[in-house]
Length: 151
Image (cartoon, rainbow, N blue to C red; front, side):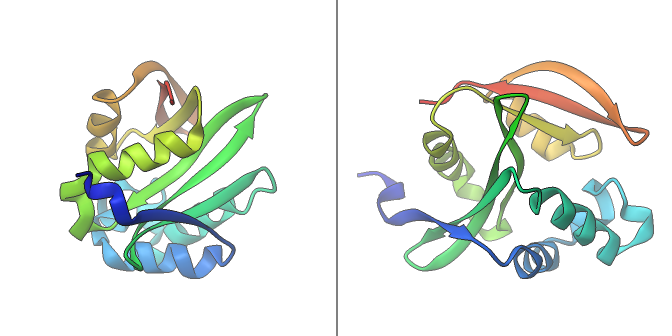
């Protein structure tokens, strides 16, 4: 029996509340992993909100029996699918492989993700699941680019 049996996704339109809730659930997002961490909580949230409100991006919540598990965003850059952001609630990180499988199934094919260089846990997580293909500087901050093969 799969533990994913009750997990499902739903499109999220209220990006602001979603991001503020996620940053509230994990203070490491602001303190360690956000590229604007020196500017504080609101700056980190606003950076993510701006990224996810791009008209080429859709955001989906992941739920397990009605409980919020995390979110992921789907976008397109130069005709390539991208995962511009994802988050797993700390209490569900022991099931991160299953949550990741929900994301991969939804992405349906090859996709790319850029991770801020200071987000070491996310980089290690992605290294185990995808191929590191490049690093780029964005606003004087380095991001690692990964390629993933979906279903």
